[in-house]
Amino acid sequence: MSSRPSVTVIVPGFDVAEYADEALASLQAQTMPDWTAVLVDDASADATGEIFEAAAAADDRFRVVHHDRRRGLGAGRNTGLELVETPFVGFLDADDRMTPRALERLVGTVAVSGSDLAVGAYVRLRPDGDGGYAAGGVQPWVAAATDPARIGTTLDAHPAASGNIVAWSKVSRIDLWRRSGLRFPVGRLYEDQVVAQQLYTRARTFDVIPDVVVEWRERADGSSITQRKDALPVLHDYLGALTGGIEVLDAAGHADAVRARVRLILAMDVPPLVEIARTHPDDGYRRAMGAFLRALRDRAPEASASPVVSAALLW
Image (cartoon, rainbow, N blue to C red; front, side):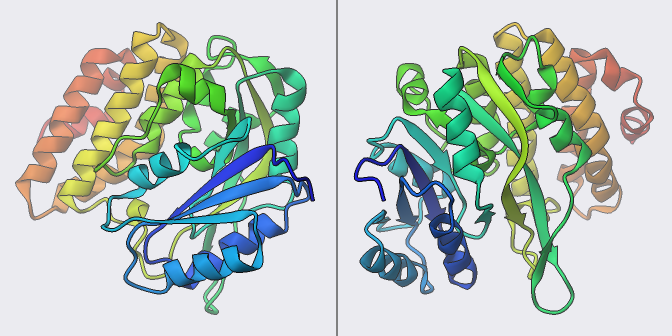
């Protein structure tokens, strides 16, 4: 084990005792052992904090921080960022799993290329019907962002990268965060979407690799954020994140990336939200969707041509 770790993995968790052992074991199984991890317990009411402490007592690569009150996922990641002393930083949510070669591949590519950021593929972990979870395949929009491998690329050369908007499929140079003053929004859901676009636009160059680096859990009890889009407050944060990400790309002058992002939102995000809105008991849900779709239509011709958007705006 190296005495000088090259990468810090920030692992925030709130009430994830059921899954945290798996997440931490996936770090310990890394083929690249010279990592350290900051485990941020966001004032959990279950045994998450105790699991983190036990891991740190057994493996000195783990460091634990406890929030005295719940502050949210973005704040947890920010807490970890303040403690990074390594050249590279990555993220892993405490209910997900990192694949064994993830750090080797992500850190390895940027260490050689000199890029500021490396982006990998990911898959969903879904309930298997027998009380466990099974990993699915790489979804088309994930593959479009990461396959084939590209070294030293940019959004102008590879606009489809903008479709990979999660925090935990990436490793970046800590200098990128420091020179850009980047931090995650606090008090909002889907807080990584805007930050991902900021990383792309502020990186001098980035690398993409087709390797699956994270298995992202869709919880059997339906408690994942991504499984609660029928709640109006969740919808507001979701639409705000989609809009904010587009605005980052637009402000940085990446017109092709804006178009790629809008096409993906129209194909993947809008149809299920429109279906929820059709029968939602709160008219505020339909009003929020209508305002979002009108803004999208005004920004992008692709939205004007979408039958789903046109039909929804007739409500």
